[in-house]
Every structure is written in C-alpha cells, then in structure tokens.
Length: 237
Image 1 (cartoon, rainbow, N blue to C red):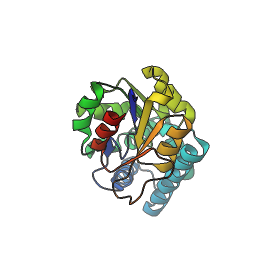
Image 2 (image 1 turned 120 degrees about the vertical axis):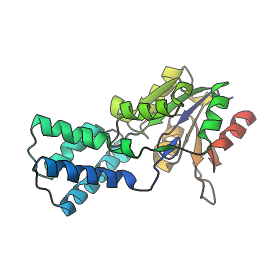
Image 3 (image 1 turned 45 degrees about the vertical axis):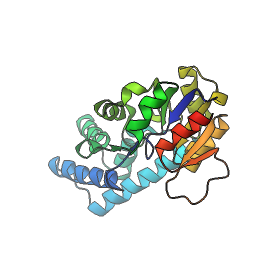
C-alpha cells in the first residue's frame, strides 16, 4: 500500500501565472537596480547572461545532480557580466534575484487545495523541490500564505541540501524524515527525468503529471492529467 506521497513543487504544486514570467521579472528588476546604482549593463548582455545562468544551473541539477544554489546563480551572473560588486551591491543583487517572484507570485495548481486535505488524512506528505532562483525559504512563505504548508510533514529544497533531483539522495532524505520506505511511497511530478526517473531510481512509485500527453512514459507507474487523479491511485492501492 502507499502510505506516503511526495510532491514536486514547480508545475505540480505551483505554476507561474505566465510562462516565462520569472525571467522577465528578474530582467526588469535587474535593469532598475543597475540603473539606480550607476552600473552600466546592456539589456542584450543582461538577458544573455541570465539565460546562460539558467542553462548552466539546469545542467547541474539534471545531469550533475547537484544544486548551485541561488547564491551560486548570483555569483555566475556577476562574474559573466564582469561586475566587481561591493558587498552591498552583491546583497542587493541577491535580494532582487531571489525575491523577484514576490510581486507576481506563483499560483497553486488546480486541484491541489482539494487533494491535500484528503491525502493528509491517510498518508504522510512531503515536498521534494529542485529550486531555481527562488530559495526554499521563500517558497515556504508562498506555501504558508496559500494555506497549504501545514499539510506537509517534511519539505526538502535542493538549495538547502545540495542534492538535486534525480539524485537518489534527495528522495531518500525526504523518505527518512517522514519515516517511510520507498516501496510504500509515490512521487508525483511533471518532469520525466528529475521526477519520474529520479523516483524510480529511489525505489518509489512514479506518478507522471502530464495533462497534454497522449500516452504514458514507459518508466512511470501512473500517468495522470490532474493532481486530483492521485486520489484514485491511493484508493486503488
């Protein structure tokens, strides 16, 4: 039987209001900050470096299986923009980068509010999140404001532990902290590599959340088009 369910964060529990909005928000905020501090950065160069930073960070997570952390993002950006920042400017860049989503925060995915209280009544719940430019401490704030934090027994964010999905250690860390063996746990997420392959490597059931896929991944145990379909899986098991 399944006695625990772990959730991916991005595109599973939460989604951005507009695709690509986080990148645009960061670029706009950086432009304003650099203008205020008298730092000269061409718009094209800023966008290029931000895109390269995300590509590098994504590679580290998905291929190297570790997190460079939001602080590492900032170091990469400053170095590649060739900005020798004072401690004060670096802190301002870090705050701007990590809190960029606060003005237009992510939204709880459809079905999540209905599913969590039902699952929490019979299962232990956890979040296993590969963070990007927004650290776990801020993602927890979003969850608390939205009233869903209390349903989870444990949360693990890659920037806080160093491992990133599909690294088996981040799954094991979550399961250890909720007191569950892999054979009795399911992980739900949208990413075929970080979520599905990662969960399977950890010995868990893999639930692939893919609303528009016409057929399931061969590696997944279940293919769902909505988070609410989790309830059918738990009841069947």
